[in-house]
Amino acid sequence: MTPRIAVLVPCYNEEAAVRAVIRGFRAALPAATIYVYDNNSSDGTAAAARAEGALVRIERLQGKGNVIRRMFADIEADAYVLVDGDATYDAASAPAMVEMLLQDRLDMVNGARVSDAQAAYRRGHRFGNAVLTGLVARIFGDRVSDMLSGYRVFSRRFVKSFPALSGGFETETEFTIHALELRMPIGEVATPYRERPEGSISKLRTYSDGFRILRTIVLLVKEERPLPFFASIAGLLLVAAVLLALPVLADFVRTGLVPRLPTAVLATGLVLLASLSLTCGLILDSVTRGRKELKRLSYLAIPAYQPEP
Image (cartoon, rainbow, N blue to C red):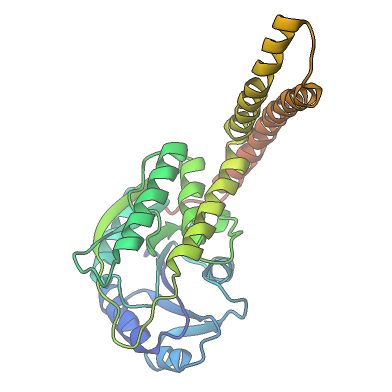
């Protein structure tokens, strides 16, 4: 059975690049259907995509995460090639990524960016990506080297089990943590990363989007690792309580009095809050385990692609 391959291209004001993207993937994957989702472009992006033969659809809710949610809900395929519409990713790498996904029966193949061009991959973006990728690797597992890559290939199982909760660039973080948490089989392929063509402007805002991604990681840690999350808060509260209580205990041992009653009350309150935080973590850990089991069962309910022997 010939696999159905869909190339998904989210774009916004990328008239200068979308033609090159479609032409590149048409040559690399001639049997694939190319979908361009226009996210309220004010230039000729949609018309350019139609002129190149892509199927163009519109998503009115602004933000990459909203586009991904719509794409994954609407399109049926066996392999989904997701690539940003800025012509920075190498279309020639797609066949190898798709073959790895199908032959090895993987759920995600990540395109790890390789570039020596400073203009293509700015130093601030490299540093931020390394920090955020390292943070996720330490918490959820070290299986992806470029967490924020916009070039990935997914199985149908991944796409139809992915919750797609974020609205913006945080969606790449969700991809990675979704795969790691369900212990999906994943792979990675090094792929060239080039400068944007003339007229194409990056939509990524280094600091504001970086903080949004960091916030997403923190929220996902709370949702997926509640016991360590709340235990850490409990530990900080307990340390603060001990530091406040030591002078009070010293005065009591020396004089038999508690002259710093407000400090003693505050320390007692912090101990109680630490106990409550740890209790919340224990309860939510059991709830999270049940949620993870349900997500795993939902994932397994989706038939996997069976390659020909």
